[in-house]
Image 1 (tube, rainbow, N blue to C red):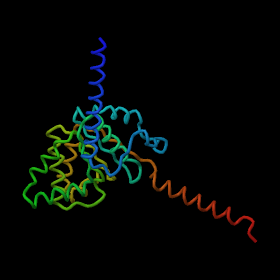
Image 2: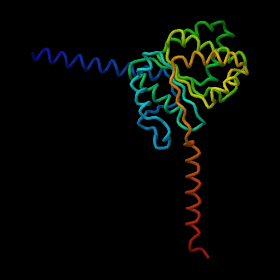
Image 3: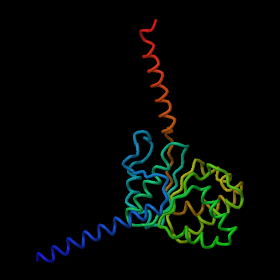
Image 4: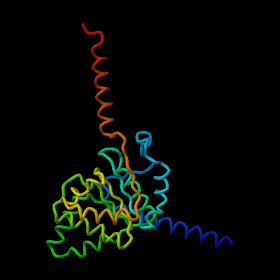
Amino acid sequence: MVVHHFLGYLLDGELRERHRRTVELNLQFARFPYLKRLEHFDYAAQPGLDRRLIEELATGRFLYEGRSLVFLGPPGVGKTHLGIALGVITAELGHRVYFTTAIDLARRLTKAMAENRLHRELKNLTRPKLLLIDEVGYLALDATQASLLFQVICQRYEKKGAIILTSNKAFSDWGAVFAGDPIMASAALDRLLHRCTVINIRGESYRLKEKRQAAAHWVRSEGDGKEGQP
């Protein structure tokens, strides 16, 4: 009995260590620009955000359903924070996740096409359990880049691979995202929205709020410094 207990303890330790190494490798593979977690998200600053929905997404169920998540809203409201936090959870669940911005993805695929290895690059992008494409619409894509982004969306859709996408553009403006091609934009949205949860964040920018608070603090400090001066 004691031997069985000891062996079980050793096995548990080995499994924990193996999982730790897997998570570490997954986080390295993800290439997140920084690590963010859900517990650090300021829900009070975005009162319109459905916290229960975010907590449901944190279970990872959307990964197994091949569901897409689209975070929409102006810059600075926490879209990337939430996307990365869900990506970190994906890595901790033992799955591969890959982070990229839309423009970096387009440039990478354009280079692969020029070097006659586009098929391999597209295949690589279908392999991670989760693909996180940040800042869709922030920088203009040319016609070739837009077509390549469309191919990624199509291939992930066909493989039922989960995508998290963040954008500052309303869906009605996605013609501009796809280089002024409304037909391509419509086809991309048709695939994205088929199995999708859309989360609109309309709150105030964290960065603008912090700047305003810093400015107000500076004004108060200047005022306090002048008190008692002749």
